[in-house]
Image (cartoon, rainbow, N blue to C red):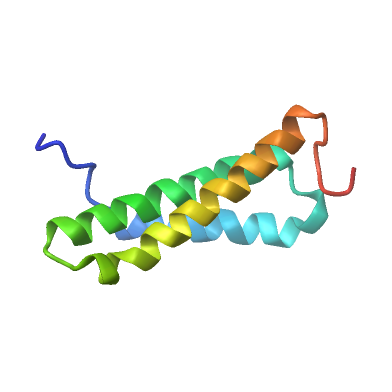
Length: 93
């Protein structure tokens, strides 16, 4: 291993999109814990994409959007985790 995270596979992106679609379809019935997990996975994937691009020589401006999106996903995941910890199991609660 070269210290870099594993390369992002197309199937990982597809799986994350399918997961997000299931949560979207569930609407406010979606579990806050599962929402937090999905958003954390999204942030991880976006960070790996940004790292791959940076390692390939892309500029900070070119990788910046993936980094910003990852940070936003981490913030949303933290909010969902806080709700879950407070006993709010769904957005319907």
